[in-house]
Every structure is written in structure tokens, then in C-alpha cells.
Length: 293
Image (cartoon, rainbow, N blue to C red; front, top):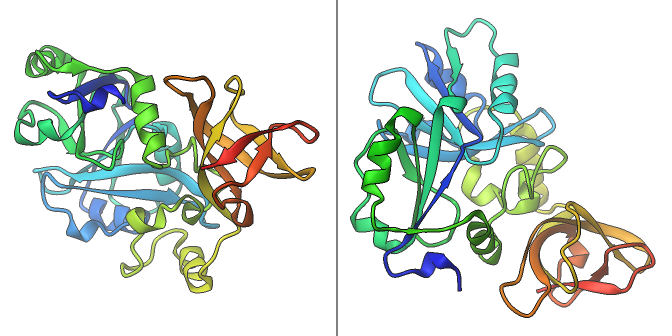
């Protein structure tokens, strides 16, 4: 079991990949026209998870968008998608909109709060606090300016500290795709099952919406994200997966198992090969060493 089952819950310090402040009279309208999820349901202090897509529906990045208490101010926060990618994407679509983007990522830090015990004692400190995606059980992300580190450390005193490997084991075990690690610039969000939580099919237009509507209407994609178990040492990622002499997919993320050797991971494979029990090799002529669980 991972450290996140500890009785007191656990926390994981990290450096966020993206913290962008968005401000201006047109901020709400502009973001609504770019984001895959519906921002109209955000209340001050609230957040919505979603994606930023290109015109072909491919994933540029993911983030939470948070509404500040101040009118016309929003925050874009991501633990994995780079601020440069998101800010560049948004900047390219700013035309006559009265919107200012400020990348403050370098001056901010983050800590993940994972485990149900946090639910009754979430800190009321500085920065941004919002539900996370590291587990299917309760978890939160707390982002804060570096200058507020002493206050954050005081709020976490006595709690169990975890490491990045613990977080990856938990995420992979619960089949939660990361962006861009598992689903990235060459992929559709539907291939990773992200459409259920990250895409609104009832909001107005946004970049990539036509592709999302078409995929939904067809009801199928060519690839799917599958949980796999491998034997032997952990390969360099991403690693190609082969079956019957054909490349059928790619192992995107993986972690060593805690006992017994081998590894578990998430792989993007052809839909027909995503069934439990399907085996793969790590080279065209190699022996089968990876199997869908």
C-alpha cells in the first residue's frame, strides 16, 4: 500500500508546472471560448478542471481554472502542463480581447494533500486550494507564493510526507491519466477517457469543439489508455509496445512495483488490444513481457 493510506493523510511538496493569472473585462468570455469545460458554473473561489485543445482536437495541456474573489480575475493552474505551452496557446488566440496574462509559475510552489483525513481540516492559508486528480479518493492541490512557505509548513506540521514515486503509484493504480505524460499533443482526450470529466458537450463554442462533437457522434476512437503490468526492468519511457510483429501502442507512464519486481503503468494502445490479458513485447522481435491487467 502507498503512504497515502496513512491514518493522518499525507502531503507531497512539488513545483507546479503552471500558474497563470488572467485579468481583464473580457477574461471570462475569452477563457470560456478556449477551455473545454464550462466556466459559467465557477463561483468565486471555485475551480473547474478541463483541457486546452488545438483546432484538430489534440491536447495542448490541462489545468484547473479558478475564479478569484476579485471580479474579472482568474487563475490557470496545472501540475503537469507547462505554463509556456498554455500561455503561448492562449496568447496566439488573443486578438482584440481586453485580457492580460501573467505567468507567475517561477514564484509559486505547491503541495498535494492526499487522503480523506484532510477533508475535515483543510488549511485556510494563502494561495489557491482546489480538488486534485491524484486519486479517486479525496485529494487537493494547494498552490502558494514562495514567500508564504513558512505559513504552509506550519499548517502541515505533524502530517505524513510522501514522495513523487508514491504519488505516481497511486495515480497509475487508479487509472488516472496525466497530461501530457499519458495524453499529449498527438492524442485526443477521448483516447484517455478524459472526455467524461474534462469536456462539456452543452456549452458554447470553444477551440476543438467540432472535433469533440464528431468523436462523440461516432462513439469510438482508435486508441485507448490501458493499465498494464510488465516483467523485468522498467524501460525508458515512452516505450513502444509490439504484438504479432506490429507496433500496437506505447507505454506512456510506469512505476516499479513495491515488491516482487516488475512494474505497472498506463499504455495507449489500439482499442482492439486494450482487452484484459492482451500481451505485448517491447520490441518487434522481443518476448512478451507486458500484459493488460
